[in-house]
Image 1 (cartoon, helix red, strand yellow):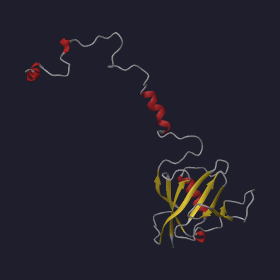
Image 2 (tube, helix red, strand yellow; image 1 turned 45 degrees about the vertical axis):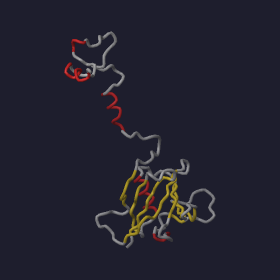
Image 3 (cartoon, rainbow, N blue to C red; image 1 turned 30 degrees about the horizontal axis):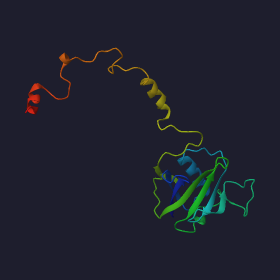
Length: 192
């Protein structure tokens, strides 16, 4: 049994990606849910895969369901199509489009094929996560919900002790020598 490893990344940013391992006899529906889970997206929207070539041109469509849109050829369905049946090249590529209204487009590239199945893994599985994924709705804070607690604890607008206030006197010479040159014994070294 072959285990396929796909790298899935955003069309606009190849530095943010997820590697997913999946068995060749599993379905595109399994890959669909694995991609959504790995990027922390919900599964409420329309989705489709396109078989692709090295130039990322869209070919045969493998859709979640048949949508109300024009097709040149009826799409294959994710629930009925095994991944292995659509692998035509050792560098096979797919384009995955999710939420047609928002237009999330992911590039899916086959990066390795392994004959060994790991008995400890439940396939499909995420084998690598790189970068912070996009937020499906709105923006995501790097610090998360804890940022508000930090902001309240350390109010940076309040005056801070030790940084001097208006009307405060400068230190006198009696307080110590702070001209940066040093004591009298060091000053003698500079005399001619």
